[in-house]
Length: 160
Image (cartoon, rainbow, N blue to C red; front, side, top):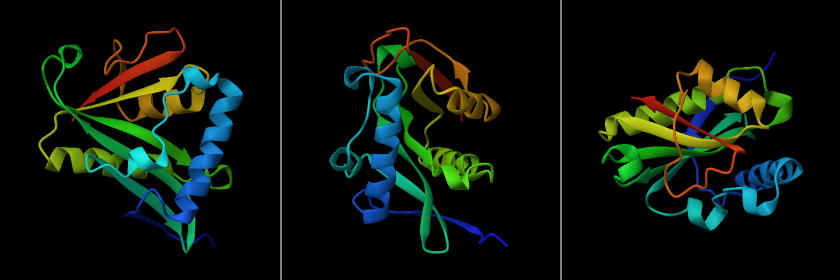
């Protein structure tokens, strides 16, 4: 029997979070060059405008995701937004709905804080990620937040 999933806030510098993020970074480097990756490092994830949620099976970290609260900009119709960042589920734990749980709780945090839109950038080579976001109600949109529209990125949005 698989242990239940518990989602909770955690610091990005927790050793298991650091290890999972390093695994994500290694994976992304197999898909894109370093300048094509738009990664928030551990230090950036500790900023006050960022919240990280983690998913645990017992005492084992199986997933993480973060949201960065961003100010209004022209590309977001003058509205502030929450940007979904650093979503990762350990390969051995996939298929249990963990990513959906993390994403739903990140979105709920934004709603409580009065945000009306969640945005994200993911890569076209990450087909499973794109499919996850589409299943969760995200739709394609134009570039935002200073990201280059390099043809490799999928920019997505969801009204909260």
